[in-house]
Image (cartoon, rainbow, N blue to C red; front, side, top):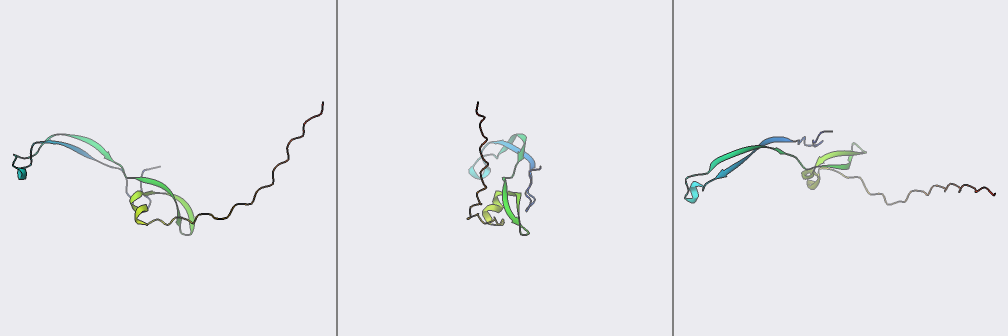
Length: 96
């Protein structure tokens, strides 16, 4: 199971984190210098959500941005209670 949004296709992306020193030129310095760079991973905020897809309730992986935006339609909450199943009779004890 990949970390990928089923609607937007957002997925894990690889990049770099740059470490800089110095003062920016616009602030009166000689400029910012890169002193190092490290590989890093940008991961999207993927959530498993029950959603209505083509009239069926499915559990899909969606990024949080689309959930906030309202791109996912969630199913209605159940207001009725299920029928109580008849209780199984208790086992009889042997008389000794």
